[in-house]
Amino acid sequence: MVILSVVVFHVVMAQRGFELQTLREQIEAEQTNYEQLRLETARLSAPERIEAEATDRLGMVRPQNINYLEAPIGAGDAGTPRLLPRRSPTPMSGRR
Image (cartoon, rainbow, N blue to C red; front, side, top):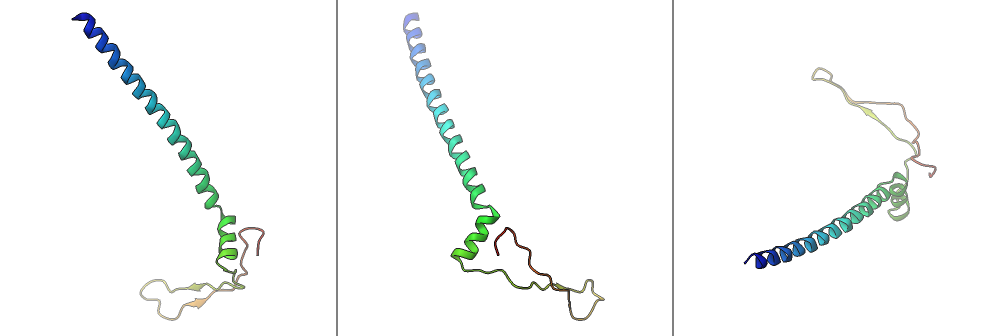
């Protein structure tokens, strides 16, 4: 009876060892995938890439002038918003 218990114990331990190795391999594969996704996210969110997509693929252009409106603050400030001085756009990168 004791011998049978020892044999069963070794079989169960071997199975658990195999399962543990499989889980370690899955963890390593998922960590590699995670790092690849982080690199892809960084590449896709780069301002230069977004600007290139906007201009090249979507046909967007930078405005010549940007106007800002200053809204009245508070309930007692009646009147129309006033136009602030115009500013020329500042490029995000070397592109225009």
